Amino acid sequence: MRPLTVLREARRALTGNLVRAALMMLGVAIGIAALTIIVAVGQGAKAQVMERVGQMFGINPITVMAGEGRFQRGREVDVFTSTLTPEDAQAIANEVANVKRLAPVQSKHGVTAKYRERTTVIGQLFGVTPEWRILRTWETESGEFLSQADQNSAARVALLGQTVARELFVEEDPVGQSIRIENVNFRVKGVLTPKGASPMGGDFDNRVAIPLSSFSKRLYNAANLSQIVIELHDISKMDDTVKEVTALLRERHQIVPPKQDDFSVRTPESIVQFASGTSRTLSLFLGVVAAISLLVGGLVIMNIMLVSVGERTREIGIRRAVGARRKDILRQFLAEAVAITLAGGLVGVLVGVAGAMALGAAKNVPMQVSWQAVAVAVVFSILVGIIFGVYPAKRAAHLHPVEALRTE
Image 1 (cartoon, one colour):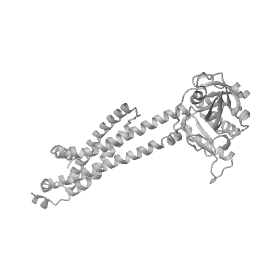
Image 2 (tube, one colour):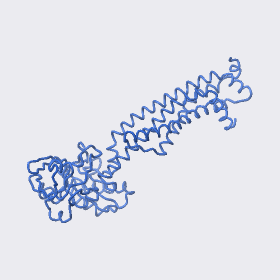
Image 3 (tube, helix red, strand yellow):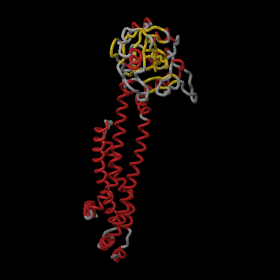
Image 4 (tube, one colour):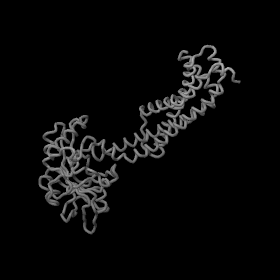
């Protein structure tokens, strides 16, 4: 039997009982719609996190973290657990070809700052160079950023995050005022633009930045670095650059496997993956729900088609008697199953896209529907039709013509 004839017979059988066909489509449509919405939510959340990471960390830079580079409740290790040195930073700048520029950083959390009678605990105090402004995309809302002259002279100047400025100065203008950090006077040179919550849950506005030289000479007498932020010439070679930096630091620190690295190299993508952990768990849970819906829909299709085979036994016997082969019967019933699930899949995609757009508009939830998601949904629906349609199709194909013709 020619494919066109198989499709025509399948269409005739399905349109002959539209209610039954609609019921078979329903389960698949629900599962595919749920799958489409889940994928849209997952991709939208990842895009939103990537945008946030770009605003806070920059998209181009990679970051070498001291120690194992692990987050502690969203915070990075400080200078007192550091295993990086200024010489490491210089070696990276000199020996890794794809490095455009870098910014050495020192940091410490839980530092006390005072202004008159007000006191606050700074979430993280940074010692930075002027390059930090470019590599971490930080700007000042008021006042001026740290300059190279501030770095060269170890000036006692500071940039306040929005949270620190609000807690110390309430409604006063902080610029030009004097605060005490670790009992050392610093003049407020500027207030940083608001950043909000970090992807890891910390407060990016509860921060203060001072010149790197002031951090190491005037406060803590520490030369080690907490991190090295690196900007690349060619972002497409990021993975290769990570390998070069890792190999260079292992050589400098005399680390030979299986000895564990005393540093880590992070990329924006790895930060996104870390920050997306909760959404991935939720997406996995919802994906299981969608899979169960598809499974139930497939079982419904299989059961209804088995009923259909029983009702059409005489029809099958007549077709076999006039020359239809087993594989012709198999193809027809399999075509019916695939047609049902494909139609259900297309309906589910339309419902899912509409649902994703409506949910995004109503709840201000980021949604991103891609053609890949639609393609996956269509493939899933076809697979459901094949998997759950094979058994009824085989049962119909193996009916004996004589026995089938005896059926009333």
